[in-house]
Length: 119
Image (cartoon, rainbow, N blue to C red; front, side, top):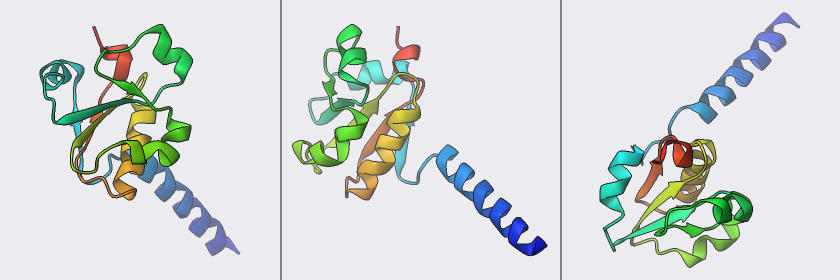
């Protein structure tokens, strides 16, 4: 019975670590690096915050696709172009980046710190 508890604790720790660690194949950039990338017409910029958050403050080049709609609306994005993802602080965009990788997008970039770090 004690072994079951250890296995459960181990699985719990494994799942927590999986959520925190950056996913393989996802590039991470700062908001200052983002400023240089905004000029690149071969990139797609996606803001995964809610429409209300997006309306309140957003970067002009970004298209709003809320995280909870991303799997249904990912077909609006080209798999041939890099996708740069932002949210408010970086957690939702990291989740969105992992989702895009699972959907077959090969070039995915997450903006660290999100809109909170944007100046």
